[in-house]
Amino acid sequence: MGGDVEGKSLRILVVEDEALVAMLIEDALTLYEHKVVGVAENVAAAMVIAMCEPIDLALCDIRLADGDSGEEAAAQLAAFGIPSLYLSGNCPARTDNPLVVGYMAKPFPTAALGRAVIAAHAVAQGGQPQAMPSGMQLYDHDCRAGPAIGQA
Amino acid sequence: MLEGEPGGIIAIHDDPPVLHDGLPRRYLTIIAEAAERLLAADDPAAMVDELFALICDELKLDVFFNYRLDGDRLVLEAHGGISPHHAAGAAVVELGQPICGVAARDRSKLHVTAIQSSPDPSLDFAKDVGLDAFACTPLIHGGRLLGTLAFARRWAGRFEADELNLIHIVCSYVAIAKHRLRTEAEMRHALERQERLLHELNHRVRNALQLAISIVGMEFDVPDADTPLAAKRRAVARLEAMATAHRPLYATDRLGQVDVEALVRGVAEQTVGHDVAVLVDGIHSLSVERGVALALAIHAILLGNGDLEMIRVGLRLMDGVARLAVGFSAPSLAGDDRNGVEVPRSIGLLLRQLHAAIDRDGSGMTIHFINET
Image (tube, rainbow over all chains, first blue to last red; front, side, top):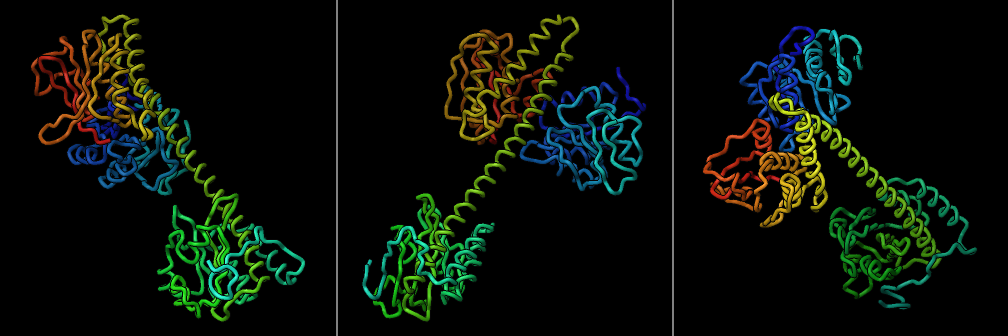
């Protein structure tokens, strides 16, 4: 088993409407000893899970089922204090949502997911990631100290 | 049309209008200025407003109406010198309806004189606006009717020949400018559409690659005893099923929709290795994302079931709700599980994505779901 680089096991919500992609994400995160508390295909399903489970980080696709948007999901999750990392083929170049930490563009390297969630969680907690996988980008929010970090 | 009479509607045949030596020098200045402004214009309505401001003093104009051709009618795009009430009354003119509708239908320049003393009921609206002279020019470019531009006076019952000549020259420039603006707008629209398609293509390619990774990754769930060659074959077959879902992508009128019959037939024949009879009731389509999920689910269900005899696709009413049902007639799939069938994790996830259920009866198995697309 992989085990994550910083020894943290995070509780992750996967907001993804493609069943097999969600399965891949879930398997990869489980391999790195994170716990996927639920998979939601739209905003409503994400909020149901968010109200029932403590969540450290949400991984949000942008285009969801029923015409829903991952940006809307991230906005509603932010109201619960839940940070997000976009995981999509069409990630927005910027966001006004300070709890959206950054993004990884599809197709993403599965092996990098474990480090990506640790890095995203560290940034959401106000820290700096020790290691950030290739392909992950952080948003440059004004409220965050320091410049945006590109590819590590 | 009362051609040549002192009052009423007069058609003028001076195509194309010419800049002759007898035109007053100040007209030539106005024409040059109008051409310059029209060349730089970027808004069709504001352009005519500006033109009216430029020529109204010289020609002592009180009113203008600029119509845009919209299907088989004219829509008022810009106007000046009339009340909101009259503008509302003139908002839409059918082709053939006096005065601008006649000019547009006949593609003919009209000069209407002595309106106030005319008994012609077709001029009642112009009379009500207080107009006495009216010059309407169809805006035509390259044989294509774009609309009309009309100028009118309240204070006099006619326009002089030089004045009409100036109006017609300026209107021919307006037609060119409107054609240019329309062409630019069409090009902008085409570029925007191309950009959207490129964005969509980018999304689809990225998504398809991600899905392909997931499909190959499904082999991690297969027991260790399996051979690497068998694993590769399964992965390739799943990728082919996914590709089959993309193949009939443009078979329906709606972009991004997959034709269900072509999808089901393609995946079934590819999976069982022989021709399959597909009976379809109606035409059904799915979004490409759901199409891929259905293709992979069908592939997983039919794998190793070479006794497939027939597939039926159609709507099934269940609890008052129409569900799209894809039924597989195959003895090896038959059973008695009308309340759902136990399926492997990957199929279960695909069914969840489709919001689908599976049941079995004596003849085979059926996937059914509400098709929201």
